[in-house]
Length: 350
Image 1 (cartoon, one colour):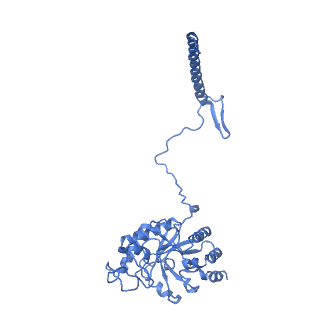
Image 2 (spheres, rainbow, N blue to C red):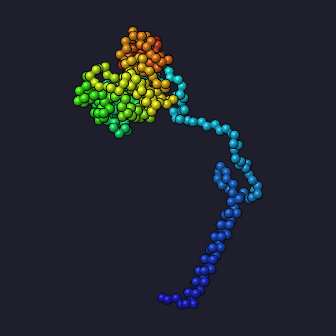
Image 3 (cartoon, rainbow, N blue to C red):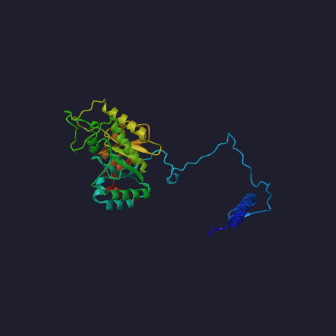
């Protein structure tokens, strides 16, 4: 049905008039809202209109730029309830947990850890001489140990964290079969140059003067540092006692000390300790938060070993690894096998 022309004109006029009225209404409403803003008061319970306040009165204090010589105090909270870990290192008296211990009887290890007092120093094997990791490393070349209960080790570390222990990670540094196999140029060669030299345990040793070796060790240390360890012990940080391999890059002692310095420069901080498992008590430590660890030192030889160190505070920076509870170690830092923890803790209580 068609609409007559006269009616269509009437409808058009009505539509235009309605549109004009709507536009006028919107303009009036917008002006009203803008006008009302000067009377809006914000309180803890919400916003309200207060027509008693003059639009020319200023409530509050007018902002002014700060003085150029004004000092501002800044507080840094770096986590862990801002615990101050920048203090000087202290003497250690704690226990170490080998990979064999938690592979054979993880439940027993967990029970013994649970009985230890809070803040006890605890050292845990995190990478062995075969080159495999005892945790889920994110490093590209890391190989996870297939003979280790990785989830169980993670639970152990979680418990150690909750107990507030001083946490030390031990890794095999220069004795690393897996990395040697994958990076032959980084290892120590046989005299015949037919291939890498292998020790009696079937392990390869890395050259501490090789840049790839230093980068690999540093990357492992940095990952463990990121995981929350307070200290990392680079075990087997030495040359093997053998004359069947080639090393033509200068003095061995100087090579080890130069390697230690490079690793410390890459990884050290005022909250982190890097330590070295050596066989020579005259090893010169870098000028940072560092220690040396000695193993297989008879308790009767402790004093003679201490007399050979070249750094200050040997009771703090020299650590003996012992399988016994012999008290002759107690004058200096000592980390004992977890197997003697009950004996040593009972002696402390009596």
